[in-house]
Image 1 (cartoon, rainbow, N blue to C red):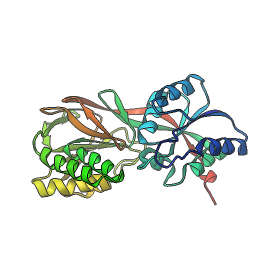
Image 2: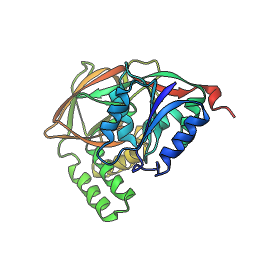
Image 3: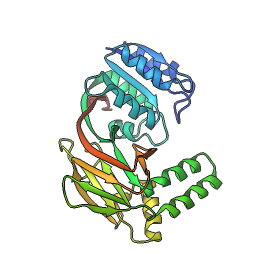
Amino acid sequence: MRVEVVTNIASGSVGKDAPAQAEAILAEHGVTGRVHAPSEGELTACLRDALDAKPDALLVVAGDGTARAAAEMAGPEGPLVAPLPGGTMNMLPHALYGAVPWQQAMADCLKGGHERMISGGEINGRLFFVAAILGSPALWADAREAARAGRADLALLRARRALRRAFSSRLRYVLDGRPKGKTEALSLMTPLVSTDLNSEDQALEAAALDPAGALDIFRLGVNTVTGNWRNDPSVIVGRCRIGKVWAGGRIPAILDGEPARLDDTVSIRFRPKAFRALVPTPTATAK
């Protein structure tokens, strides 16, 4: 196997020693590869250069945004991709490898890795592989990031903004041709992580998040940040292969843990083949 490894040393839990550690892991497993440590602003170009080298696999040690970008750039016809945990939330890496350090996940993949085709969702051409949230509760992600950065004042400011936006521009949606609905937010989960879908299911799990008042939107915002939104009493769950969502202004969103701003009208579709993941075989992680 010939691999390319991209390490974002400025991200979350990666660290400046990551390139040297990655080289040591490659050598330990007898794998030929190059390790990159791009500077700030060079990450996307580095991913493209690594893919242009046509390796058997691309291993990425970075945060959620970079993991999603690498998988999206590779696509279903590209090389195997191992999005290793190097950020704060690590949504895609944890879904694929569990909550383990990136060094262990990398070693397990090289020790006995195999291909797993990963499905996903697409919103106006932007892919996600774990979950997406559209609507005002997504604004709580901005408050979360400020809190993690130690900016309590900014976190409070953004939390107040999220509360002010509640109910100011509700979403309209149509899913799989069913009757039009109205909701405060819409959440979409892939078969990779949904507890209501099997990995073979050809659909997204769609949940309309429709709180009735300010206290409900506060609770829902907290549950969204902590990952407990599916248990919220204001949630209605269904399935979706295609859909459309629109609002009176730009739609705030979270795509695989990363905040985003979408147009006022977006289309949704399920992608049965999104990218080829490199994952360990069961024996690779056995003790």
